[in-house]
Length: 436
Image (cartoon, rainbow, N blue to C red; front, side, top):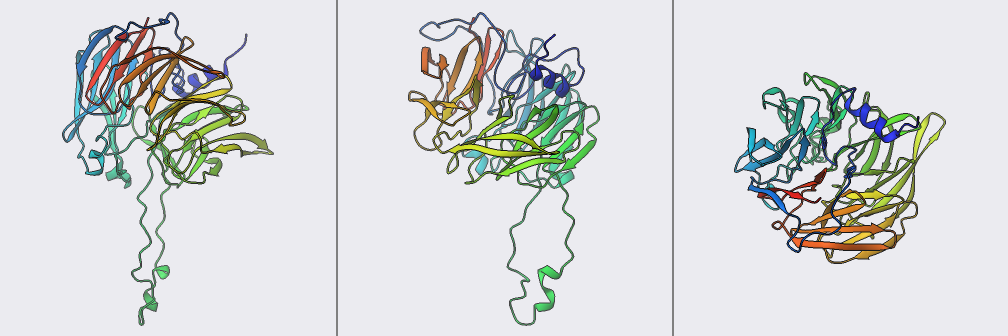
């Protein structure tokens, strides 16, 4: 019997569970925005795929989870964030829970969130608000099973635009990038002025720095199992990979990419990503020791090859270019190619890139910055202006079969595909579409 390595990784990540949700986390079942499905339409009606239902929802970019006929996501109304469970067939609210989460001026610039996508493991739902408060709910009733205020308990900073990483499960833990407050060096007490030499800052006892770039919590109790690493995080969410039987938790941080042992957070490898950029997109693993990551602004895309040298894992940068710069979007690997939207504050292109060489296969205009999901050989694209498209992509190019105006501007949430139903939201609405 042939065993699929990717499937093994999923079972390991979610534990020995008899039930796994259809779309349980950020990026779907395998955290790669791909869904095993069939029977999707080859073309849509002129006005787009039929709407099964449509309703208003509060502000936010949190994507939609699907589990046993129930949808889960997060939204905001004024100074409160809500975790909500909806009937997948009707969109009606089953339960919702309100949590205070103040809005900062910077968060108002492009929408105050929430940005993080929840996580389902067995009977529990894990969420993280823009204010870095984590909740564990009973997914059926909405009862709070445990709560951790990571700012109050660990001194975690609240990012300017609000917290945006999505949690990941590993065995009996749920792991989250957290970070710590980092102060700029102060000119005070530098000893430069006469008579202050004996009060130099360097003479002060150095406080012990708590490592907490990543924190692993017990899924049932919320108890901290481990805290490790000390690098500045970004908005990118971690992924789990497996190389030669060794599991790695991979995080694209603010200035570097690193792999740690998910059992304890110990460093396995790291590589500085220069030049620096806006690291928002989730890395992509090709299951053959190649790791793709992309950043916006002055950075770009690169691929690392992970190899064993003795007992150590060593990341070698295979290629780098600035032609593909993924902002607040995602990319999808199909075969030996990466497909996705490139662009930050200039023109956006949808592109195909060879993962082995970095060669740009093609670039197409027609979409603003866009997210996408893949299933049944088809790519479904949603750009930030609300254009929804059905396309096929190959190394030779992209063919758009259908396109329609569906949602409002700043549609930054990646769609969710389960079976023949597509779930979509913009900043104010949520809907279900029949794409069969």
